[in-house]
Image (tube, rainbow, N blue to C red; front, top):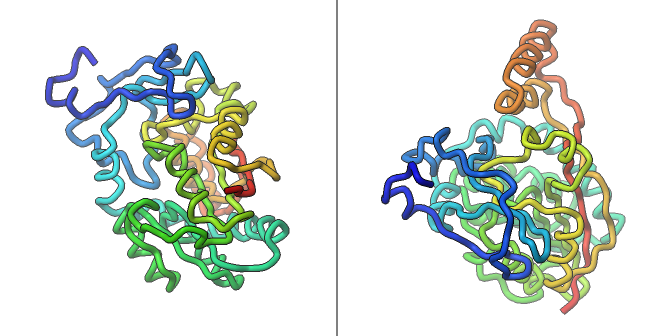
Length: 311
């Protein structure tokens, strides 16, 4: 951070490992803040935020958890998520609905009796919309006020603006809690999982998906992996994620690759930050053939876990 002003340095904080509490780490990727406009950095934090990783990424020497350190202060991150709009994200609701319909089929095999379900960090509410249509009593929370309002109106469901901690739900309130591409964004994943345990009924179900930095595609792509983003504060492997879940009194019962469905043009658009030339060329080709709106399933290292809650 040698090139930062004192003002910019005050925006950052140092953190210990969120899994084991250690502050002994090795640097995986050094910071490259020369690429950033720090005066507008709050705008980075939105659901479709696709800014390539510029922060220092480290690996805990004790437990292996990888995370950003130093990073923007928690209050600045939450300010970024709560403000602004995100038309780019909601442009892909059709593909997200297809993805969540498949996910709910799996969930309903584990939890055949449809009850009360909470989606934490629900963004535009596509998961809740599909769940509600399938007979679930669905509710969500979302830090982005714009997305919470958009999703509530579009799907006619209840989405509370704020974090799961802001909602102050009663203990044992939900049969299922879901975290879709959420935990890696949170400043304190350990606290989020403990709160999920508190508000789940005994034996309740937690569903979580995350970009797995231990996956084959992440290892192959290295620094070019598409999920190395400044909005992702933590990078989990299966080992570190299972350990974090265990410490919050969850036991994993299902593990599988998580395939998502999005428009082909949107996928090429998101790739431009990493492979600018090939992505732009690909976008021109598919647009010329009218294929930019074609829905395709893709997997880039995402893992889906379903876990049981114990008290």
